[in-house]
Length: 190
Image (tube, rainbow, N blue to C red; front, side, top):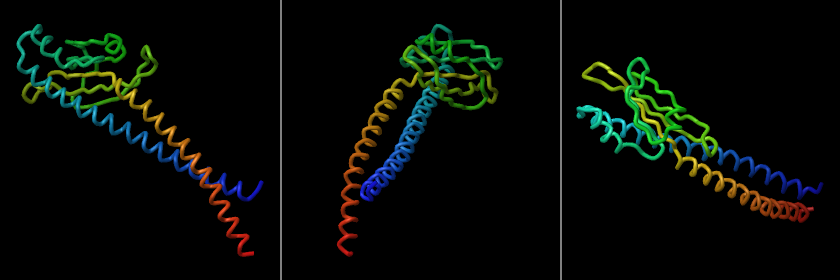
C-alpha cells in the first residue's frame, strides 16, 4: 500500500472517530436537555392541576376542569396511598393500561419506553404528592407520550448521519491533499 494511501486512510479514520464521538455527545445531550424541558413543563402542569383540585367541590366538576389539562396521548390520575387509582382521566387508553399507577410522597419524573402501534415510544410520567395542610393524602400522576421527541430524534439522527458522511468525504479529499503535500515536501528535500 502506498504511503499516500496510508496517510489518507489514517486521517479519514481519525476524523470518523472524532465525528462518532461528537455525534454521540450531541445526541445524548439533546435527549437529556429535551426530557428535562418536558419534565419542567409537566411539573408546572401538575402544580396547576393541584391548585384546581383544591378549589373543586364535585367529581363531575373535576372531570370538566381536569379535561382542560389533557394533551393528546396523555392521562391524569389521582392515587390513594395504598396505590389504588381513585380518579383517572385519559384520552389514550393504551397508555393508561401500559403504565401502572404508583403512589409517591415525593416529586419524581420517569421516562419509560413502551411498545405501541408504531414501535417503541418514549413516555414521561410525573408524580407529585397531594397535600392537605402538612398531611399527604394521595399523589397526582401525569403520563404523556413524547411523540414530538420521537420525530425530533429521527430528524437529529438523519442530520448527524448526513454530516458524518459529508465529513468522511471531505476527510478523504483533505487526506489525499495532505498526503500529496507531505510527499512533495519530502521528495523536494531529498
